[in-house]
Image 1 (spheres, protein in one colour):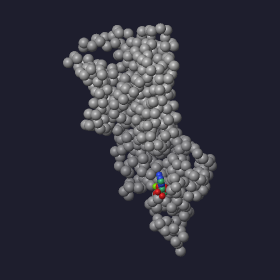
Image 2 (cartoon, rainbow over the protein chains, first blue to last red):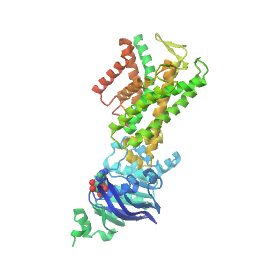
Image 3 (cartoon, chains in turn red, purple):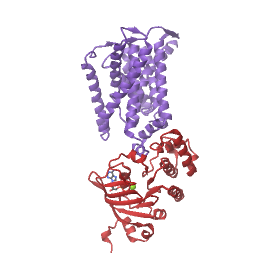
Length: 243
Length: 302
Ligand SMILES: Nc1ncnc2c1ncn2[C@@H]1O[C@H](COP(=O)(O)OP(=O)(O)O)[C@@H](O)[C@H]1O
Ligand SMILES: [Mg+2]
């Protein structure tokens, strides 16, 4: 089953091109990586999928249903969650409150939320320690852990996460990636945006490579690891320069 | 000394009004970063609406029909909340992407529309209207001052409403959503929060509190006028800034402090100095503590 399917998606910011004519799919249960240099359009694509911005052309389907102009908060209720670039936890709220809000769209009654909270804390015991602390006092790594925990509170079918390793030291990156593998093991489909290629290809089964708003390369992770076109995409060479 | 106590007593009473109106100011600011200059006029419209409803349900000028006043008060809270929601829906919401300055100009425009709307409405108009209900003079003495039961009830109701808001914002899931929207609207949407609905609810609550304050003003002062929202709006805005705008506890605290300061100030200089004293306090506060009293404690900010 296709969890996500994008056909011919183009997004513009006024006259500035975000992404152009992107085809992409993610099957249920997969981890798929979306790679590319800074400014390639990775975040733009996630924002279009979660509904924060609307594409000019193309269609986005979620488990076979076209999202159309469905508002962003309704997409969360349908089971799609997006952990944005920079984590964007609520720094003036406590960790407990952040987690509770993660369940806002899907777990409407108190007992459901409490049960879900127990499940998530069971999965990620790290979060249990500072329950009453303001989230703004957490370190970058802890904030990323909280952001993933908060996203999992909605019990999503698909988790999209934007550059989770950004700004973290290697040890914290390991913690975060272990969490993502845990999430995937539970059957959650993952679309992972990364600049750190080797890290992403380690856990993803397939990957797409974006360059200047277009998909220039895609395939199983194993076939991409040694592909020179991948490093070209990062060095800014266009596909035409090759050979 | 006992004179000072009297002024403090009066000030708490005055502050109860300011606090209620300031709460609405502060909540809307907290969620939209908008200084809603029309807020005082929601309060003014509420006074006229309650005047008309009370005039219709009470026969003749009557003392202390508390139950009637109470249910009319609740109805007027709902109507004023609804008015604030409509203002949000048709004036502010279409401008959500506009510069904050444009929004403020729209707020001033809306304020003019409401004032002139009341001015041209038959039965309302420009004169001072005598409110159909007043508080009876019976009460109790504290120090050398006499307080009526009406004053006490007004302070108690204001306190309860403020506590209700504090509980709502601090403890309930909706309140947490309000604070989330206040901090980061996009992140809030990504939690599945219907941000437009949350903003509408904040307008509703702010309007409802102004409605309650309006009925209490009418009952206590006994007269209403189409310009009454302007002064109270300024005073409530001052109270909100004194306490730290956007901060729930700050609005109430700012209201009380402003009430007491104004009470003492007018006791010394005379009643016509009320606004000067209020703005004097505001200028001093901005001078020494630009964030307001509770402005830095962001935890309860919304
Ligand atoms: N809010 C915006 N307004 C205008 N242009 C934008 C905006 N966000 C992104 N862009 C542009 O869209 C392109 C893709 O950006 P982005 O999706 O953020 O890339 P990535 O996440 O891959 O680094 C870039 O050229 C960027 O400058
Ligand atoms: Mg990005």
